[in-house]
Image (cartoon, rainbow, N blue to C red):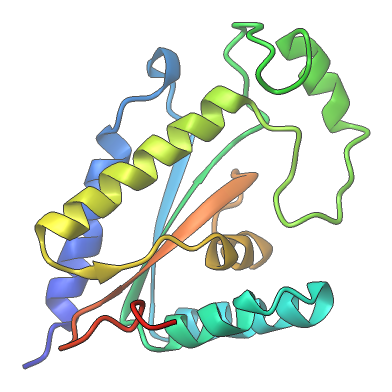
Length: 179
């Protein structure tokens, strides 16, 4: 039985869960994209490139998981966007200080920082809401930092500084289980 259409629907329902997840002060800076087919191969190739550059071998393992997936949901957030709460969780006394630090932050990193802690939390809540929906639908999935980094590098979420990817599969045994 072919599940491609069902996986697209599942990814769309997961995207709805991410979009409607609670966010700090009700301000939404979440970006969402569904990747399929050739986009998955390009994502896997980018993950392999990152592994070669950084020496992080789990990117290679995860690239194999991406190749064994039919669909991948990518969720990111604009971590540079602040809420004016001056909470200090980002490591700076004020949101203005965090924004000033962006100009002197390293640019050769996988995620771009510094990041507003509330925006980072918003991303976590959105990702959690999405995988909750996948669980309800019995769709195998795994939250991947590695694939999120590769999606950012490929420009899939142009306004995001941080992202996670969630590959999806419907098979007799989850490809994400024995890694």
